[in-house]
Length: 611
Image 1 (cartoon, rainbow, N blue to C red):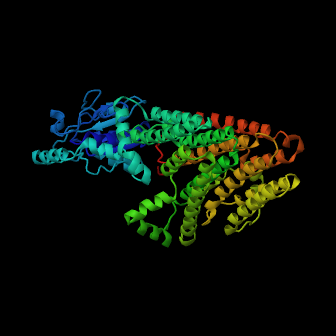
Image 2: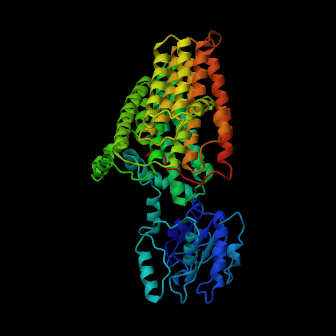
Image 3: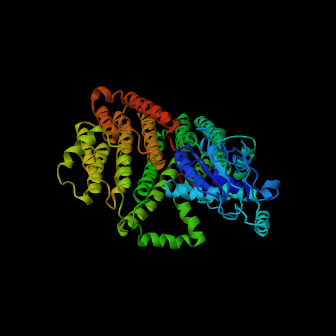
């Protein structure tokens, strides 16, 4: 007996190899061999107290009963009133064979009718056996929801009363909203976007369709901004807010209907950045129509926002599985979070996507693109200083021991190409650099490079600075990145590469160099975001051949420096940057799409930054 949504949470979430609720168990294809072995051992024992029923199916898209669970509320059916989980497809079978022999495309769900064995049913024992065999069995936190196997009439009455005391649909609707959201989203978007998500679920719409609608809306907003008229700017601001509402609704729809997919993970992970950066381009085009060249500001905003994200990703990957991972700074942060108003203040200070998009939309409608970008640069710079300073303090005060997995993740985030690999191979033969010198070396190389591209005459000095950057970047990653501040290495590399492209394009006399640089940074940033979400999904970084083909951060930086310094290409710098951007985008996008639509991609729904 139980709420339908309790069984839906337990039995239809595709992210886990196996999941269980009292009296019910489901197993994905990867867990079936272990389930078959456990079932064989269990049925070989005499006097088995519970007979399993098997069914196959796919997760529901809306509010229906999960496949293999049947009605679960107290009044739904006579079987439910007696504590039975009835199969939705297929028939009950006294033998265990059907549960082990289900088709490879679906899930296997075993349920039990309580008998003399009481609430300790066969699925419960199978779940324990799977856990003992090393299978990760997901047992969701149900909160106020009920899922139970009553042992007798009194227990059934108490369970039925508990079911009737809780509104299943209200709980489901509340749980569709992300647990940790920004102030703007929590108070101005989620109160009604959750109902949009439910409306979509009841009409069979999928999260991917809503995500695509959000992308299309944002692209239309960028097109309106590109007109350069006041009416276009007002329409762009309104459409950007609508796009954000849909962006919240797609995640809420996924949580409401438990529709997690590989394609959804890819779309959700990349479309937010594509929407925001396309909107930047639209604003820059609109400003150009009015005679104001703000491409440098647009590219600067994209560089700053992407580097902020890399800082977040790198710090989290370095510390999420570290041991002895405590610090006085973290304790102070927890104390501040205990006070309600400080939680919202701190979330607004970091300018998350909800606050950021609301600011962009309002300023677009009432001011100019130049004002929008300056506000973005100032706000994001302050947020970046605030978050980075806090993480530096945590890293310096905590005594964490980082794992090999974290070190590998940081090395993958570094995006080192063949040139850095050659340098690293040579450096590994020596006991250099010292453990605490890797960040210093990476910082020194990046700083020297940026001083050259910003201040030195564009020529041999810039190229020599890029060559030195290749040497220092290879040296910095020659050994495992387990130091307290080694998580700064990938952000330093991102800043060095992106700012090099920005500075050289801004200093170039070639027409169209800055828009071309915007396209190149966007293509490279997509590659770096794709790397992050592959690591978060547990599948590791992109294949080595892709990183080498794309040149690595140091190879691309050197290439851009050479293109800007050589007279033959400097006069056609915009064309050279465009060609490089197209080449990188084609290689990266083809492999990324192939991966995310393949069966090997993780079925995850990443929450990303707080909305």
